[in-house]
Image 1 (tube, rainbow, N blue to C red):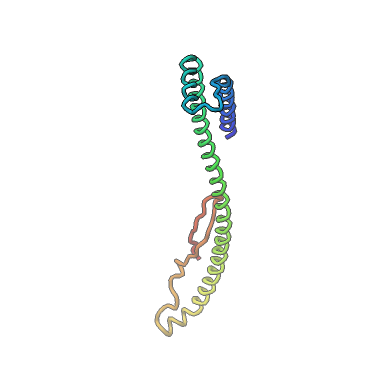
Image 2 (cartoon, rainbow, N blue to C red; image 1 turned 90 degrees about the horizontal axis):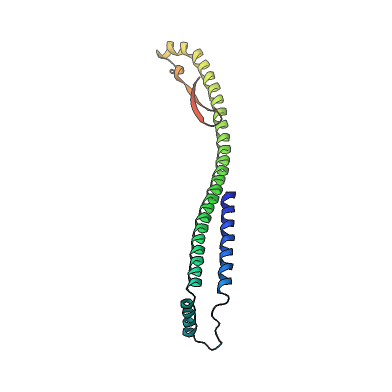
Length: 170
């Protein structure tokens, strides 16, 4: 980014030098009186250009060089602005990402807390079921609760960058 800015500054100084040179060459050009018409001034410049073809060619060359350098400067300025905009946008996205990540961490901690509580409640329920099942079989001829082997609770874990939600069997 600094190199691009240095290039732009260099182009500006070259353009300024060429403009000063052009002004110096055109300083002693046509002098017009107060009452000269626009047509008379135009004719005077044309006459001077015909009389001094080398000066006209040099001025044309300077003008072309200034135009070329201006285009170069605009391209570099556009590239620089694009880079600057991209950098700002990236920094803003990183900020938003960090804020959202903090919110997600709070939710993940809450999920893990609820998972621990749920796992504990399921263990308590299983203990009740283990105690009630023999009597329940005697009265109703069927189990009280089934499916304890496949009960799982969600758990959020992270390796630092990627988060994973896994099911832990209770």
